[in-house]
Length: 257
Length: 259
Ligand SMILES: Nc1ncnc2c1ncn2[C@@H]1O[C@H](COP(=O)(O)OP(=O)(O)O)[C@@H](O)[C@H]1O
Ligand SMILES: [Mg+2]
Image (cartoon, rainbow over all chains, first blue to last red; front, side, top):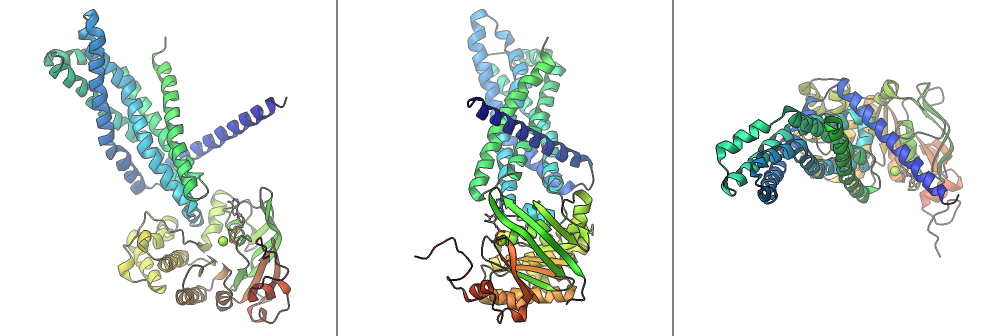
């Protein structure tokens, strides 16, 4: 009995946290479609997420594509199956590595920044000031960020896909001695719309998760600078775990059976 | 004052954080057009009181009527309607640091009253002039301002939409005496010009005497004295005597015991 009690308490606390998060997410999402809208704020967030994340995501993608080609070559050359490399690269990048790695990088960049900014606004009473000025903080702060995350991550991932495949091409052609024309032809032959589409759906979900975690932890932060620090860490960690978790379930949804 | 209407009527207000009771059956009436100052030591719950009235904190019990309408437990449009009547100067100004000064001042004009940018900017510049901020400050960001400047911007933001009720949370705390004096004068002027009802919070007695018609003292979750400002120096209420003379001995228990 004394063993079960703390277990039960933890479980109840977990359930209530999930409930609060769900409510926060639903209310904020509903504000995306209800006026007034804030195009200026949405635009600023879109630029922040979509444009300023490009270097980080691009670098991640190109090196991932390069190492992918290199590693598959080591494995496949033993079975004389080098011609499968374009296939491996494009499928891995579009289905999994593009969205997951971009999601994780954006979690570190954007999720942390959002939690810190909104958390600072919370502890310096700027969110109270918004409320007092009869402006809903979920509408003014959270909804534009969610919308920007949901729409910009797919664009970012599409770019990452192209750069990643290009990375694989560079290594295959210049280091492993592939014929450029054959490599491109093989890549295009193996390109399935569903691979790209599933990756973009993932990207959209990850964009939602990253911005939601950043906003939620920032919004509920308390206790000065230390509290903002904790919120930032929690935002990045929870977003990363959720990304990997949802990645599995979305993959299952698209490709199982 | 007695024949004037009650603007804010607080009855039996209770608020606790966990085991810590902050407000305990508090009663307070604020009359239309008057300037009431609540005094009390740090951590007594003065800010909590204003946050309960604004609906930023949910009271555990009690009623707060504004213009005769219950304000506790409101949500959505009803809550926003109440908040539109109130302008608030926060203790640390709470300026939006992503926006330049003029957009801070114009915030309520643009987002709540839906005015155009050009008109809102014009009004914002006028309100800034009212609190002694020149046009050259309009494009500055809050992080570039001194504490006194920030309070002025906060004040301009609070009065920009010409609300019926104004709250000032420790308007002079942390300022030098001269700047404190200037802010006090601005508050008196703004309240007078708008004909607003004002609730200010302070532990600075000089400031309280300057800006108030009436003074109420908060101690241990209740108002232990309420009366006209002129009587605050002649009353024999032991709490007031101890507070304004800054004595260690008296009914007010401090957390730090002097050995
Ligand atoms: N959000 C909160 N959570 C927990 N305790 C709080 C909160 N806000 C205020 N308190 C506590 O309530 C008491 C009164 O705070 P406050 O109203 O800010 O005092 P002051 O009279 O100096 O303005 C303090 O002891 C503070 O610790
Ligand atoms: Mg206070």
